[in-house]
Structures are given as structure tokens and as C-alpha cells.
Amino acid sequence: MKIAIIGITGRAGSRIAAEALRRGHTVTGIARSVEQTTAPVGVQLLQGDATQPEQLAELIRGQDAVVSAAQFRVLKAAPLLQAVKSAGVKRLLVVGGAASLEVAPGAILLDSPNFPAEYKVEAVPGKQFLDDLRAETTVDWTFLSPPALFAPGERTGKFRIGQNQLLSDEQGQSQISMEDYAIALLDEIEQPKHVRQRFTVAY
Image: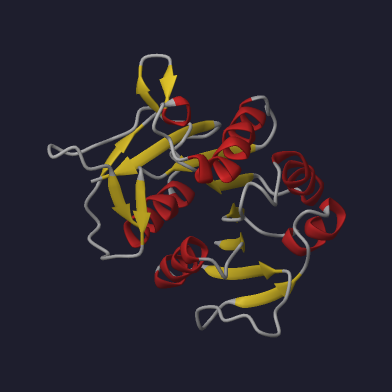
């Protein structure tokens, strides 16, 4: 498949690219600046501003899927959806956040009393991004939320899949490596099971 990744220089984006290449897919990376950008060997880098729908549409035209690993404070849902529709790309996958996951019936992590204030600059627009996707009825989107702890680590291929609730293990830890998260995302690209849905993964 042909997969374009926005935010390919980030920690999550680079690992998603590596997993896609590992599986034999053709990967295009989109970055604002490609001169000082490092991406996994085998990635075709294209320079462009993903916040500009017309420019992005030209860069992703002909792709089978687009993955957005960009920060929510930078890239909103509206211009991304506009570009995807204009380019005729059928599949959009978004690296989500954990803040919009439920920690109790009707209560999300973002609204917890002890949610760190410094994280809200990304968490609040992340929740809005998901809300905007849920109103979208033509693009086949998927929003994959990581658990509370999301960091580089080991590629094990072993994890659990959930829907809208924050997943934790028996010790109360809510975590996954970016490498295993990338496996879950590529599995969803290859065999869609959560079209126009949010899902989550954790150990």
C-alpha cells in the first residue's frame, strides 16, 4: 500500500514509518522542512505545510491511506479532512491522545482533578479533533488513542485492544511502547476494524 505520514519526524511518526516499511509498504513523509529532516531509510520525504489544505491535497493524492501524527495544537481536523477529501484518499488514521478516554462512565481523563495543566495545551485540541472526526460521515477515519504512558520502547507485538475506556494492567499501569502502538496502527490500515471509530491499545 501507499501510505503518507504527516509528522514523520516525530517519535510516533518515525516508528509508524518504520513499521510500515518493515511490512513492505511504500511510505511518503510530509514535513515542513526536509533539509534537516531525518527519516527512516526508504521514506520519500516531501516538503509541505499540512495546515494548508490545497497544498496537502497535492502531496497526498494517490495514497491509499494518510496517517496524521502531527500535534493537535498545530493541525486541526477541518483542514486535514478537506485535504483528504480533495485528494480522494479513502482512509485517514490519526495518532490520538489518551485525555479523551473514559476513566469512569461519562467521565474522561481530561476532566480528572489531577490532570496536569501543562498537558491541556495539547489534550484540549485533541479532544476537539476527535469530536470533529465523529461528525465526519464521508471519510473513513480512525482515531487511535494510546494509553496514559506512551513512549519509545520494545516491539513485542503483545497488547490489548479497547474502545473508549482507558486501559490499565493489574498493577494499575496504563502504557504501551510506540513500537507496539505502530503495530496496532498498521494492523488497522491493512485490515480495517474501526472505521469511523476511536479505539485504544495498551498492555
